[in-house]
Length: 324
Image (tube, rainbow, N blue to C red; front, side, top):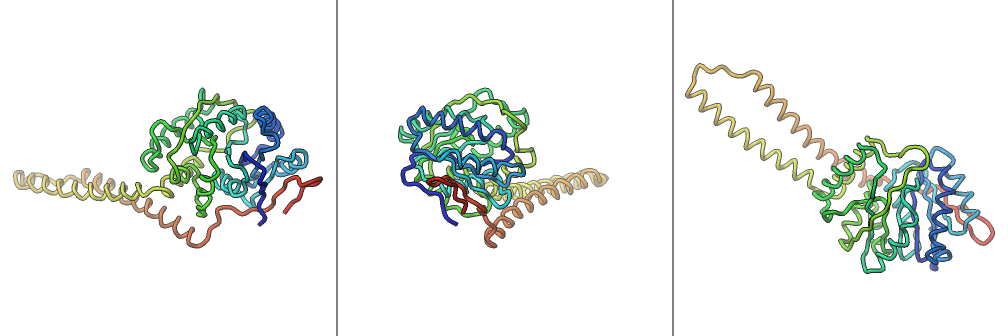
């Protein structure tokens, strides 16, 4: 598959696209206005990655690529998820600085200049912190849990919010895309490569149309990907639980033996027995499930499950759009 590359590009903006056909024209116009303001109108590219969106997003991307020479479209053959779609875009960037943002205009393009300036200060990555977040309560609570989990499992620096709106140096991107496994988690890959990270505050915008594409189930799936693809902490937790239960069992056996010796008339407790069996069974099932997650991901990786597959590329060359 031919890649979209241009040696004159300084900034690449990667946006995974899903169910955003009505928002894309306004998004492209706002990004163009910001890049003109930053004097980068001739030195940036905008990669719109269609994650097999069920609406007309790909047709809109093709139209935009014919109108705007900086728009480059990538269409995936099926829906791979936001992080895998982002990896597809990262594999085609040309710029020295890469911006990753969402397609719903909740990430203000006006912050791009400040993010670029932050990297000019010597940092490898610049994340954004949302002020006045416009997400529902369950998403906010989920983010707090994910923040705690990523600190424990990935060694995330304290106080850093892993926003999907970020700027990355090209050499870090080159290291990130070396990962070819099917379960990509971009933030985990970034934290594996560097700790030279800064952050800026931005105003979180209201989504213009529709609802977010992340449901509770997909958020849980993303958390499992983060927990089991980039850390062995869950396995260590399972080992710790096994050791703790074994120790607890020995203590309980000792207590029961002493009670039976001092009170021979004591009847065996049916309720406590059932509760103990259910508790131990539940913990065993949890630990087996964790091990199964690791084995399943290893099996799929060994069998060559693709991270993404590109169906079409479109961008303006000279006077017409070429589709590969």
